[in-house]
Picture (spheres, rainbow, N blue to C red):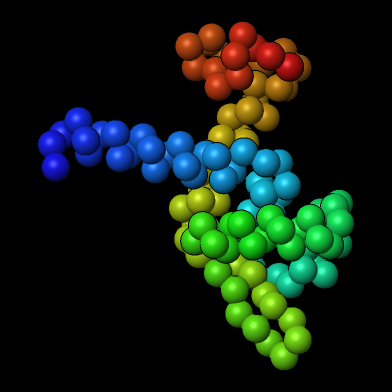
Amino acid sequence: MDREADTDNIYESAAELFSLLSTPIRLKIIRALCHNEKNVSQLLAEIETTQPNMSQHLSTLYRAGILARRRDSTQIYYRLQSERVATLCRAVCTQIAQELEPGARIEPADRLLPGGAR
């Protein structure tokens, strides 16, 4: 493969990952699973949504390889497949939180939010 094709593959993979993470509830699921595995009931206690909606998002993240799962009797427990996704989400969300702080002094070139949006 040539260098341009390698670069294209990198950008395509990154775009696919960002697409998977483009729903706020999926970011909340990743945050909830950062430190330990949880079942659907535990996730529903932390994240306001319906059980069918939660299951759909968990299934999408599982099929994409972001989550792993294990069965214990009738319960299915989910965990992060890799800490790298959590690290990426934490970095982006921390940067945005800093930009949303009242009076934040961040150079325009260093912002993630377009035009200093609030």
